[in-house]
Image (cartoon, rainbow, N blue to C red; front, top):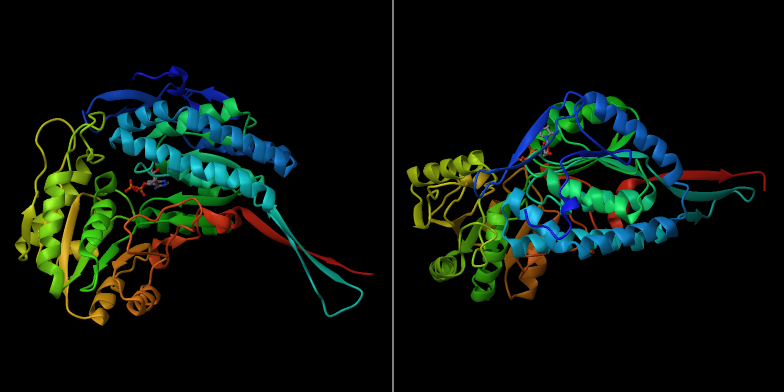
Length: 484
Ligand code: ADP
């Protein structure tokens, strides 16, 4: 890897301000999904090291929470500056381990950094309350305090931003964090830790450890010192972690799977809808939890929308190694991801769907898949019910607004949804009717550090980003001052 700052590529974990290996030297190899090559290795740490990291985070918490908010803000701001300065190196590391095109990786690094900047600012604005009381000799005062040691488990699809979105608000309030990044993408996390060290974040405040997920996860959920778990990943694992956290009644934030509907009404601006669908569906090769997963198109515009979308896919998307400048579609993360996509396509075609373009894996090294559009898809097919996490756009037809909303809501998921319409009354009606935490109206991209990201139903609990995001890391303490 060709880095301006080679020390950003770390193959050790960062615990209590020290770079450490596994005692017995055991490691996990990390591979480049575009080439299959081994990039490097990280320590395979287990329960014991996780417990040690939690103890160190607890010691650090006692000091960190005492710092003036302004001082924490200043240190976070320095971390932000270093991330921005190192954007090229961080993007190179990310493309190597995750596969996304380099320009998209730079975009993620800056997007991730924006949470650090935002929460560095918010750190200074954690306001309490005074509340009038019915008794003259008493006063009600509300304080907001950091919850304590937090654990974070993050996925591979956004190796940098999913970490900053949790760590920045936690550190801003005075919490300390132990992070377990995904085994597929640990190097982005370790590079962030290196920059945190350089920024002056004190030892033990931000820790990153790698190793078998089950072991580390079990310690994080069972250890009573951990007061909060924040997880981004699959609904299946999220449910298990939520259950495990019950034994010590931890606070939890969960950002789980999505199954985003993307509705195009007869009165939509079709070119804008196609552009939105392209951006939402094919970002990160379809591997985001807010990617359009079901394109529901009103009968009157179904044919022209499909035609325009096929043209856009064929003209705009280039699949290949993310370091190639022409490429805007990287590989999928692993063989399992390719097989899941193949299986959904096979099931749909067997039940009557037509492949308008794509449909196959690309032979050779790496886990590449052709950007695909399926027509005549129906709710009987698996793709209507399952999250895809790949570059497949299934098009469903609908007749009425009621039918579209019912189809959109027919899922246990409730993360992102999108729709295109130019009728302001319909815009308001549909926005209120969609059972989702987020609704993109005439846009396919809505993530921002200033907005509350999160889902309802089985897509999660809590919000990340915005003024609401900091509440996830705060406890409310009520002081009743009597005898006045
Ligand atoms: P994905 O399908 O995105 O890989 P996962 O939910 O499997 O979703 O992974 C998200 C994160 O959860 C990763 O860091 C992974 O290592 C971790 N993880 C997976 N299984 C467990 C588990 N049993 N306990 C704790 N963490 C887990």
